[in-house]
Length: 382
Image (cartoon, one colour):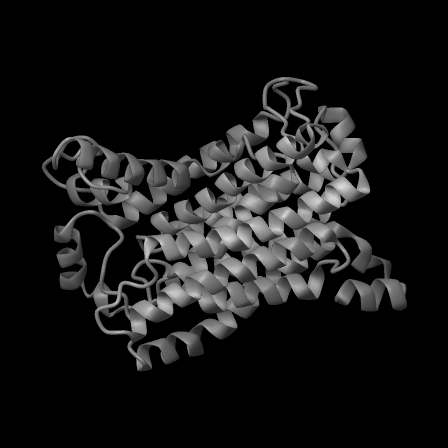
């Protein structure tokens, strides 16, 4: 919006620089989340919007949360977080950019699914929100709609790079799905659906400790911001030997807004948390990370960039699968694994005492930072 007003109409060249708009988007996202956070938290407290069930497979952890007072902390704070993110994007990003527009639609759609899930849990007595099938259906409809629009544009415009996959480590290696006809498009939709929905659910599972998900979002968002920026520049892509995606650099503005809004939310979500994110925040934020990876053609590197999200999601899936197949035996002490470390101090076996919540969060931030730095190092390992 501001790009069109100040750069295109008033010819203020500063607003044409992506680096300037990335910084301003981050600052705006932070300021808006900080500004809207306090009244939103007060409103949530007034209406007693509290989620009583912990995201874990252990009832003892839910009882511990009750004893510590966490059950009285309001949730659905993702409402002002996502609001700050979207408003900042609308202010500073170019709204004639397809990647940005589809990213906004994906964020709004996933936020709507999360909002309905939160609203049902918090307003209907005894309701646990959307069923697993209904939630998955909602996520799938939104994701396939956005991916279908991207695939249609890629085919109609001849920009087959948008439908290709680029494996890491190998220079000039590419899976040109766009050239494989209908089968290639279907494979693209299936794979990218897995990336987007999987990352959204991973962010949702990880949102279980004060500051954990928000801090991880900032770290992963910074790495993907850099990937998006260089993927849209012919000089950087030519030097590094990575694919050039026209206009992908504009997604760096979205990454800036994401990081800034998460910092503003973290102000209130840091231990001891004044508000929790809820599905209305975690689902769309995970979707934004996946979309940035898709645009920058880093889908296959995303598990490294978001390694903690992946580990938490994988541990929950494996725990459930193993528990059912083994007749009630747990493979991990608790799932997701951050709760096992907090409660028992170990992933596979119980120790004398667990880690403090702040220890778990900060150490997971460190692991995430290592994963993000390793992903950036892969730019030259080809």
